[in-house]
Image (cartoon, rainbow, N blue to C red; front, side, top):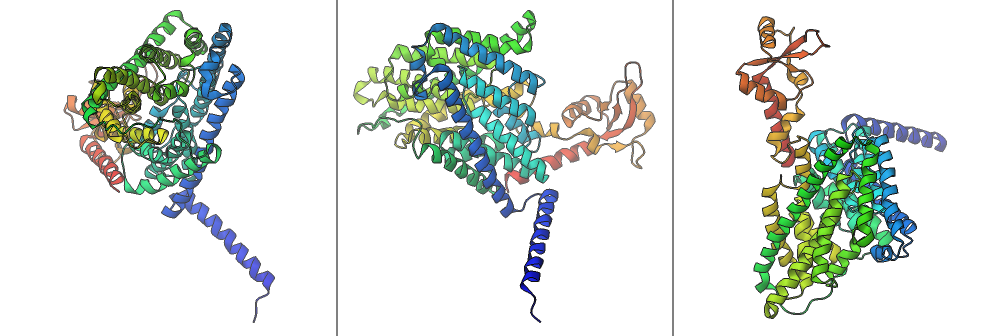
Length: 562
């Protein structure tokens, strides 16, 4: 007997609706399957690409409005024609607004950046702070639009991390899935920011996830490509910088010079990083001594930047105009050296003022200036065996940026994709290898990992160091009522000796206590108020702690080699 068409369609729609609900429930409860995950990676890539594009377009529009520049690519040239008081006022007002935003969105007045994304990937299952992240993106947007001397990649990467964290929370993603989603968002954001899909994908793997697991490669590449497509729909298939064509002179005889350039760039990168940390400590000290409201710290930094920009507007914003001048050899030796010094000062002021922004673009500018200055000297001393000084500027740009980011692979590729010049690859790679080898021994591997180290977050040493901080005592202790529990009398004796730990502590706190006390277990307590005795919950056995740590190491190794 034939089934009526209306009944058939109604039955099919009901099955489709039920299947969709079941699929969503499965996706939410157990996380996505591989095919579903690739689809989510594509959607996250598109969303992060649009976020990066809108962030960039917004900065350009606000800069054009505030500085009255008809061409943002020549912002500092236009700023030279403005009244001095206008150049001074803009960053001060921007700093006041940044202070208000951070005071509202964060509890510590600190802008979130790439370092926080790396921390989220390592310690928090691929999650980052969402409210503070949105506030940081707004603050960095204002900073970059009003004369702050930093880059846009830091806030864009963290904003992409916020988006990935939202998705991870909605689908109840586990640690591996959450980290992979975070990598997808970061790859798309970097790719869309610089029109560099290869470097964007490798940046997510090398800097954020800090491994090259095969299972993460395909979705991250999908996201990176989708982010690049978003960029090219607006800007086309063009490079950020145009490098002049070189002559036929081979530069292989110059390789020792490029190796020496790498050493110089490594030292310059360390100076930049140390200057930022020194300025931040100095700013914190001055802030405490003067007892200034937190909201005024970015405004004070804006005042210093405005005063500097009156005479040297090259420090305003990202600085791509100055980079282009360096890559085309249109700067004199003294100009390259002076601008490099001023850029270090300006970046340090911006970061110390908690104004926001990233360090990658400043590192590119500083590297191009360093490389140009080195190239001018090298080609003057050995004119018969030297190529163009612009090759040195290109190699220096990659060398300083790679040393700052601690990412020689992705940074080398970003330089190639930003310029479209693949012929000078040996020169760039030679300089990058030397700069990263030197700088990684003078700081904790990179700017981001050193920044985390200053917050007592030890990621630079590897999983064996930071995994201890991911295992909480409460999850592995033996309850005092358990059959294999520790003796309560012994527990109280240890408590009286000061040997105990709070249930919210991690193995990072407990393992040194086992080493120093020599006990088989440590009581776990909840501390009462002042004068109240602690409440005993149970005990953490040394063997249980070692087993938990071993499991964490095994899971990390399995993820990195899957």
